[in-house]
Length: 298
Image 1 (cartoon, helix red, strand yellow):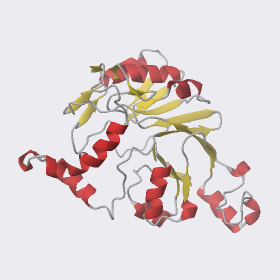
Image 2 (cartoon, helix red, strand yellow):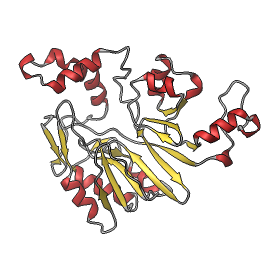
Image 3 (tube, helix red, strand yellow):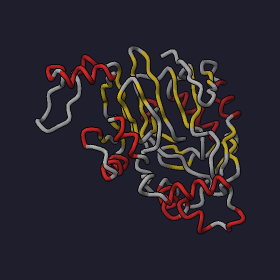
Image 4 (tube, one colour):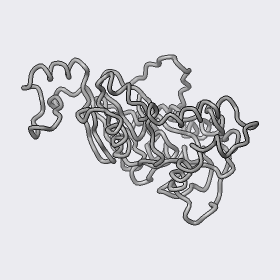
């Protein structure tokens, strides 16, 4: 499983979690591909250096099965050459598949923080000519972690309580106030590809030029879209349709970042976005049930 600023890999198991908990990485020995911000946090939390692979977009990385890692560690002739003290990976020809890392963008949040976000809602203009993801970073530092102090006690829900408890334990739950730099991961598997883009944003040029084009795209559908670093004028549904078009209409799209949240907005209404991306006649949105595995044709 993957997050846009963090990719944790030791194939065949991929697991999604924010880079906030060190125990999983230390316990499994997983190698973490992540933004520099996430890597610094994990390093400070005690994850070993050979498990940390910092990226910021533009990298191409071979991925290996657990069996291949075990064989290469037992037989140095199967390891790719490198500087004496550097962590070494198996030879390129032993890769099961690969991942291309691309710069991306964090979504923006509607200023009214509604109870639910409808992907049909059209947003125009901005509160400031300088609205950007720096607002997200400031909100993460001075807003969200201080909900317990800023909200009247009678307004706090059980969800708020669990969130407040989580952010208060900074020893166990490692996280950053900073956006950290969003990344997209394009998994290249033979002659097919799967793109993971876990925020509603992106650079048009990168999305248009990205190769190979994905057969399946996992795309976030929460918040107000961020196009080229600026608030997108239009709805999330309209932006999703544009993004799918720039990716040359992958056959399948899977929404993410739209599930129930512990703080408002509580949920995302995806119906308009689904209708918009399917209007091209080539793309279908797959609905996935929680906790139920799904086999993808990839």
